[in-house]
Image (tube, rainbow, N blue to C red; front, top):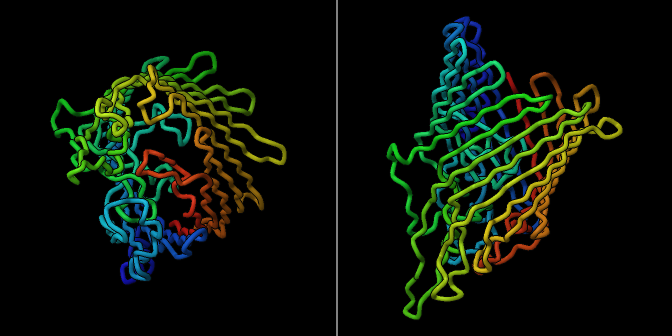
Length: 445
């Protein structure tokens, strides 16, 4: 409990001395506490997290700026109760039952972003640790695949908290009617699973996983050109990088078929180099926005039902088409509405491939502000059509002052859990018994 109290009591007075800092240095800070309580099965507190974040911006000159976003967090749930209670579903996996949570560090301190901006007449350069988003369809990663995802809390955190920042070079060159962006990513990082045996464990790094070497030839590059044509914002992109998931097969979740001798026959799994050609558009129609994304991916490997026959390969490579459409509008009574639909199609699909040939999903977000914008009501529903599963997230946020806000919400999982050991994978339904309610309070200064 001492680190959490340290954040709340000692840090704010220290940084309240901001008036003695250099004139060109600005600080934006917040302290946030998050509490979650599982209600569906084996009720228990599952999170008692306190976060302190400091964003510092230094304007060295009109042409050179520096930004550092540091975060310090401590989850006191590790002190308050037996960690085994935070995951009552340990029979989902075969390693051992019960298991101790592994790979958990309740205390974390790191730079979320750390970069410098350099401005020239027609070119802007950003160098350092950063997040760069290309997509326009929130939540469905179609062209937006530069930064990997941290699945520590599944997909329940805000987008900026889910993305893993990477060291990269971003160069924007401005022409009369277009902007050309070049991205170079020398750092190789991939999707990060939740800690083993934790509440939101769903996939783990498979045994024998082969990771690419940190060499210049394995770095990632991307190019994106954006323009505006007859009132439509258009962007065409090309990304040559790594699929952030290893081959999506039963081995991805750490399982292999046992032989009669009791030895595992898990084939080695690896990350694959992919190339993605993408297109995005945004069109305003009155007060509405119509958005779309399209991506054609080559080199992606798909897992197979390799255990069904000795001649079935563990993975096959197929081209993939991904696309999504979005509509932002306003319903009666001032309800802001965001509707999205997305599909992924595997070219030359075969029955041995675990993934469906055509996979569809949709999301609906409703927002309403009340009491002079002090009260915000929000509802997010994500529905995966193929597996008939949904994530429902109601949330209420009240702004007590310009500095203090408080939120209450719930995360409700609907669907079949499936059986991950039999390739019956359910992305949302897997957590059908993990429904929770939560409270957040943030003080910004």
